[in-house]
Every structure is written in structure tokens, then in C-alpha cells.
Image (cartoon, rainbow, N blue to C red; front, side, top):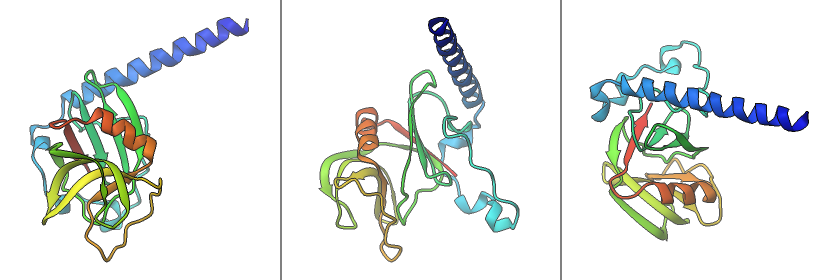
Length: 186
């Protein structure tokens, strides 16, 4: 009996993931055309700025609906989270990140360069750097500190490194080649 119930649970889980993937694909197919262009983040109302109630965080296993379709890295500024999305809209991995002091505007950017190991703009040795934007001369990219830390950046410094755990950095490095789309959402 235990074998058949575990098989049933595995089957139901697989079916649920397939349905979620299909719904995410349908939602991404209806994303507006303007999503491909960087937009003005100050035009996006926030609950805190308007004095309204805080929005409840989205389900981390759900790729943001207005993030497009196809292979992409989705970076949510508000959720401090990254999703690696495969060709057919399937979620490959999701993880939390520590944003830098300088952030890109919401929009779609290509991965423009990569570096195996370099010193970070904050002096911390980093690895698996995947750069995709620049804001006011500050390059923006994902990276992992070689010591595994994800400390908050010094607010006095203009840095563009979006930090993640080393295992997540390894996964992103293997996923995001030059030209891969990075979709930044509010």
C-alpha cells in the first residue's frame, strides 16, 4: 500500500507542476509588448509609497506572470528573487538574492559579459559573474562571494553586484550564456 500511495503522490505532484507550468506559459504569452523595453520604475506604484497595505509576497515557485516567454532569467527587485526559466516555461531553479545599491530599471536585458573570478566592486572576491546592464557607469550583474557570504552592501558605495549563494551562482553560470535574456520585474 505504501508503494502505491507514494506513486500516487508523485503522479499528483508531477501533474500539478505540469499545470502550473502550462498556466505560467499562458500568462507569459499574454505579456504586453512594452515589457521588452526598460520602463520608468518611479511610474510603478508601490504599496509603501502610496501608504496602502503591503503586498503579500508571491509564491516563490511561481514565475512572475509578466516576465515573457522562452528561456530567461527573471529577477524581481521587490521579491529579491531570481527564477531560471527553461525553453517551455518550466522553472529550472529559483533562489533569493541580495540586491546591490544600484539596480536596473524593470525591462529586458541581454547577458553581455561573464567572468569566472574577479574582485567585486566592494572588494569581496567573487565568482561566476554574469553581467547584463549598466546604470550610471555601474555594471550590474549576478555573482556569488567566494566565501559564501550574502551580506547587505554598504549603502555608501555604488555597487552593482546582485549576490547569491555559491550553489545558486553555479546554477546561474551554467544557465545564462552571453545573449540570454534577463527580465527585471518590479
